[in-house]
Amino acid sequence: MTDFKQRIFSGVQPSGNLTLGNYLGAIRNWVTLQKSYESIFCVVDLHAITVWQDPAILRDATREVAAGMIASGIDPKECIIFNQSQVPGHAELAWIFNCVARMGWLNRMTQFKEKAGKNRERASVGLYVYPDLMAADILLYKATHVPVGEDQKQHLELTRDIAQKFNSDYGTDFFPITEPLILGEATRVMSLRDGNAKMSKSDPSENSRINLTDDRDTIARKIRKAKTDSDPIASTVEGLEGRPEAKNLINIFAALSDRRAGDICAEYGGQGFAVFKRDLAELSVSILGPITEEMQRLCEEKTYIDQILKEGSEKARAISAPILKDVHNIVGFLQS
Ligand code: TYM
Image (cartoon, rainbow, N blue to C red; front, side, top):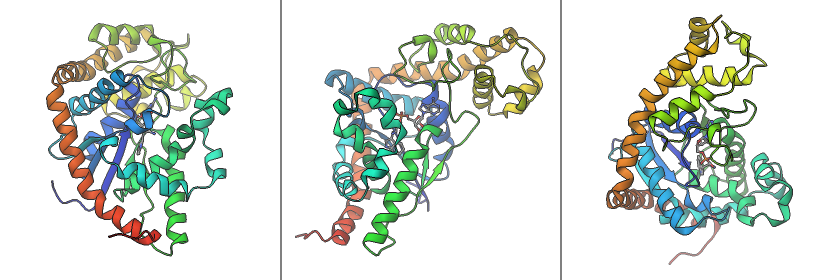
């Protein structure tokens, strides 16, 4: 691996299909960043089981996420790709962070409130301490930067708080204060059926999202059916305020074409959505089509994917073992 000074770490849960949100909010940015950072990308299976997962489906979903990363352009020779449970240090450091983080901090996490909903008493303890495990993922490698979509911002603030408290509790500057990288024109991709809801793998409506397992016809159909309003497209970004569905589609167009949202507004402003949607469908299919097809091909090659995850885990263990050893020392654990 090339010797970079700065290290990124990021992860995706293997729970449900990868969506256009995962692609534009995270994976597409990783493909660019891998050229300038030492990069570690993780399929976070320990996070996935905070909500019950069928074991056979979890195994396949883990491979599918790894295949999705590779099909999108993550180079397994230059980056580390692995699944979290193969590196026990994640769970171990998470325990130490459970003892650093405060209940009050976790009580403020909006994702827990959303996911647990009214059933708070019946949510798993794992779901509650989920952000501590996420901090452990990042700090186990002393990652300096974490590229994510906007929905992970609060968790990354918690990671910074944990690093700071650990450092001050033990009188050290051991952990870096990690910087989030929230990049591009589609940092929060919204549902195609409701511009106020995040595009999510758990939305019951299939038409709300584009999956990286969708074929070309399905992608085009979902874009054509996407909800819009009856006004013409605005000529400026400011004109999209209060029009969440239109704004979302413009942002998706901008992100997929590596252009600014303002340029897309200038090009299509004043028109209805028909031509815009036709072009967006074409653009989406031209970018996502080859990725979904390669991902499907890779999913058939289980041995190849398992080998990449195994080699990635070995490299991840090699980086994290001395860091974890130092943590033991700092905390006061005897080591033989
Ligand atoms: P997860 O699996 O929900 O999503 C993976 C990545 O995709 C981004 N993302 C989105 N971006 C824009 N619009 C959307 N609609 C959208 N949906 C998802 C997420 O922001 C994320 O970057 N807790 C994390 C996984 C994780 C992690 C980590 C990330 C575990 N440990 C350490 C970074 C560092 C999660 O559930 O992501």
